[in-house]
Length: 203
Image 1 (cartoon, helix red, strand yellow):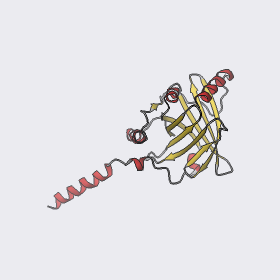
Image 2 (cartoon, helix red, strand yellow):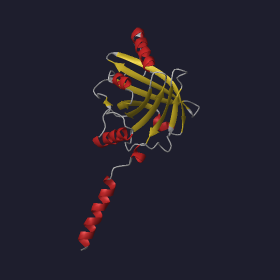
Image 3 (cartoon, helix red, strand yellow):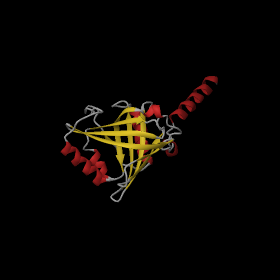
Image 4 (cartoon, helix red, strand yellow):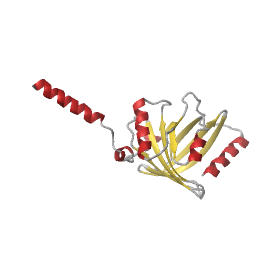
């Protein structure tokens, strides 16, 4: 009798641990983001966008690297995104203002970009929600970035569950075999300007 009770208790306990998280938990913002945890280089692992044209544009990138550097002002962070297109590396530097787990990009009057860091069980990952609004588009984006290029299956499943909760399409997966751009690069000016113009048009 004791053995039966112990087996049932073990089953209930294991079942409680494997129960899927609710959408409320999956898309909950981080309680607090430590700036030192954010600093440094991150690679985009996957991304999904509600705006179809922008989602297609993401598929054209071979890799995306994101650098965060906290300034002397704790509320201001330097953000640089480096997109690789074949042999071309495109640098896009911005300043972002942060408060807790929320942030906003300083992009002038071109468009409004605010965001939130969401909860994730992945120890060396960040999930970034971007809310983009401009004359050309309104988009909800969700990016999974990590210190690693490849993640475990359970980590990817959690991210995909977050996408489903936000009614976003299946993610664009970045190829981990594609090389990342270095932090400092000298790219072809004409090509970089052309791509930057494309990005602004999509905004």
